[in-house]
Image 1 (tube, one colour):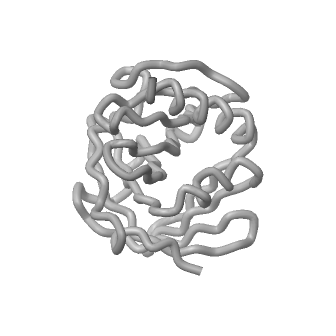
Image 2: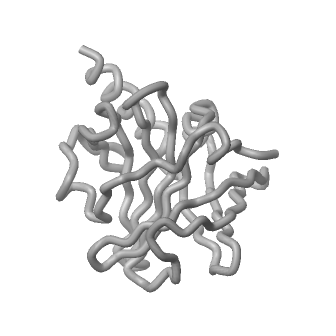
Length: 166
């Protein structure tokens, strides 16, 4: 199954530091996830989770600057061997179901990572009922993200997104 990322959307350009609370407006926290408003995305809302032991941060969000779209962004303090703008084919494994996409590399002070635009909001919101997201970037080590707490976090994300329309 394919997520038609990059064909329906151009790569989303994010000015996202890995420490989300430094750039975004905090909306709240729930179930181990922080909820933020990103004014440059429409405004759009996102959930973020840091794993300080692993030196990583994951963000799952909504780009509301046009037609609503989603995105996944993963960052690490370890060198990810990805350069800004580099296209990296990825396979997503969500509880055993596989999808493909293309990530766009980003470099920020002290962090490397990539963002994957998602043109299917059902995929993004469907993560709320899942357990584990494993991302296999071509030629790089897999990244495993626990989706514990995403059900509650996505409820808050939806509330956040609705509040931005007012």
